[in-house]
Image 1 (cartoon, protein in one colour):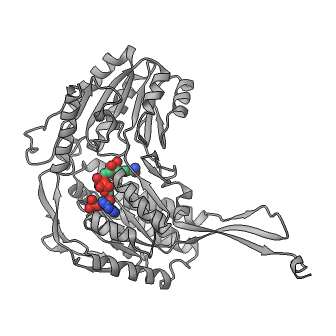
Image 2 (cartoon, protein in one colour):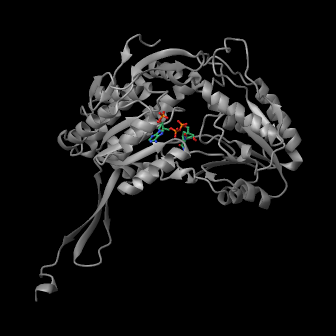
Length: 491
Ligand code: NDP
């Protein structure tokens, strides 16, 4: 247990117990509670929003010069780095990811604040080519109060990804973390306060998405929602946004194809495919969960992959040797088990995995073995629906044309992988596959300077990248008259 006390939430700078129900955050590796808190209530939402709106108008944050706001965000990055080990351990307890992964997530969060501080300080508005006796320019203004709604799989990284550009842009932010992983958003709010972000600009309201998230999204003072989560929730938020004429960014689900061509470096491809699907226990929107392998090398490749999957170290997230931790909840593991059973009913053969591992301290946690299914077509439900767990569907392909057709035959289009030594073929396939991100001879690598987002049911809008700040700003065009004469209208 991190603390026996009930954890306070943050209502526009005020740390206090929420007005909602008491609930526990469980350590997925053991099922034991690690924190207890009182969720936010609808009254907390109302109060946080009213007060955050007031703080936006009165704190002077939006009026600070870019380099002044940037220096505070640099301090946030520095504080995250100073407290990195503590944050990584808390993140491990909150969502059960192996410690090496949570350390990387914390480093990524610090890097995100650093990047957006630098981007803010160097961002330029534009003077546009004039078409008359006036100087024309395009400038950007903060929106006011914006909301960040995040899922449970990589909390500190996805929260930083929204908080950093939103604050850089001069806004106040209300964060609604996933109910099951509230800790990192609360830690980030504490760090922002310590770094000098004015009180009231950051709120953290843990609680049920269908109640708290919904109320935040609908609130008239919330001018934008940046959402990461499932496609069904994303579409619900998009409907509300349409009614309010509110911009949203939606980072949603995926069922990403990974394509291994005959000429691929198989050592690299085996390691990359394995990492692409089984790291983070497959609880990753970009997991490479549909594998297409050239028929000529299919048997050899899948044999090597299955052997390597059996050797993955599944277990204690506190150990630096662990490669796969538990799944997030018992309920989520059951959903994955139902998908594997569905796969079998659709004709799948379980090449490896498909069971709960036992012993070595894993009996009370929500562990599941890395699983490879064969014998399914691309149109099977198991191949088409997002499982969000360590389940790979492997399929052979015969021609490049058919490969592209099948890779693109999905409601999702978030990411894709191509493994080939032939750069011309890799280029052709990389351009032909429909996806927000394509990795060639690598997978699941990220850089905050490179935009990220999905097509189709995988989402709307982009996060990251220098331009990411503009997502949290309204654009304004200004015309400065330079004519010595009045407009001809008065003649
Ligand atoms: P959900 O959509 O269920 O939840 C995401 C967040 O939305 C949570 O904070 C949740 O709260 C909240 N929420 C739920 N219902 C509503 C509502 N009606 N209004 C407002 N907010 C709501 O997704 P999961 O938590 O199950 O996360 C997994 C999903 O996230 C997967 O589909 C995955 O692909 C996607 N994802 C996408 C990423 C991307 O960048 N494209 C990255 C990571 C994940 P609560 O916790 O109470 O349910």
